[in-house]
Length: 175
Image 1 (tube, rainbow, N blue to C red):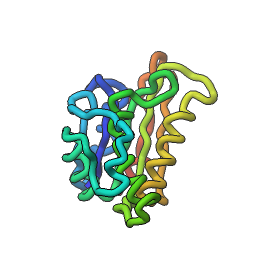
Image 2 (cartoon, rainbow, N blue to C red):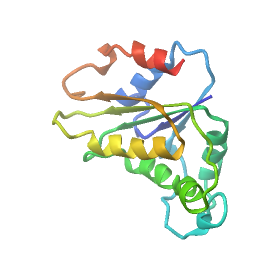
Image 3 (tube, one colour):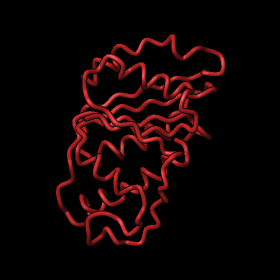
Image 4 (cartoon, rainbow, N blue to C red):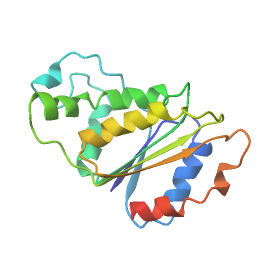
């Protein structure tokens, strides 16, 4: 199963149109979580997960933890905002702290995912603008021991039609 974490507030914007184009030809179950539609608070570093699985915050993140347990691939998709993923998506990712403490503090095994794909779209174009999301994805890959990862970074969406971008290799990658 592919878990897709969508960080775009616009369900029909460049980011989600690109993701839907990628998964169109894939014959595998997928679930899309729209971060702006979820009631998920950011990690508050309460240290609950230093000793226990899960999180002290009782919100919709519980369902995402369950989905991660069922997933074998993850897509993190977001428009670029000030050289970062969207704030609602970062709230979700911050709650991956429970996996970090499980792996590095408690020294326990964390669910391994087979593949990851970062899809990031941006209206602008400068050399280092995707560095933040790339570094965040490196942490996600490390947490879930993902060795097979790709990034689709689309710039200048204010000037180009992102739907004209060939996504074949990303669809093939996820198969």
